Image (cartoon, rainbow, N blue to C red):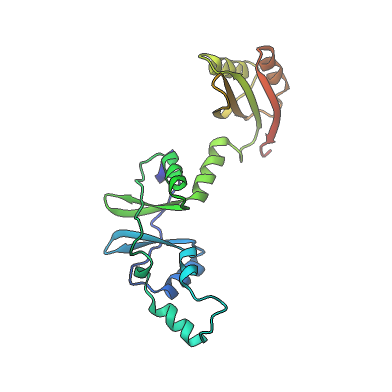
Length: 216
């Protein structure tokens, strides 16, 4: 899965000359948490709702409403991005790379740039949605968690056993707790899995109780 598959295309953006007041209005009306900043078409930063709240006057301020409005309408976004590191990603990068960049830089979104042009934005919510999709959490069926020896041929054996017992695998993921054991998570379209579970156990595969039932 690529970044372009989950990003929001053509996101709303602001410029360094946009005022804090206008940026706040855009965020409120569009229910946005962040806005990319473009200067003559080039990405120069990204501003979050947290950034704006940090430069906005505190509710305990002694400033009058007039002074508050003047401050917000006269302060430009360029004051927030002077020393900001510009982080972006290509739409053709794998989604895991976007998650890694977010994690490493402790950010919640990345502007997506192609040939120097802003084409989208990918957020942590998009990553969560992709994870749920890959694991089949919104699909009908049953989830099984298997513990098996981590050696060649085991995945084929599991798939064959499921198939021979009338099962249909829709999603699959592998995790490792130890160097010699693999945790295999299966999402099956099948609802009745008792005979599948028994067949797997007969081969020495540990089957944990089904922890998730998909939608009917």
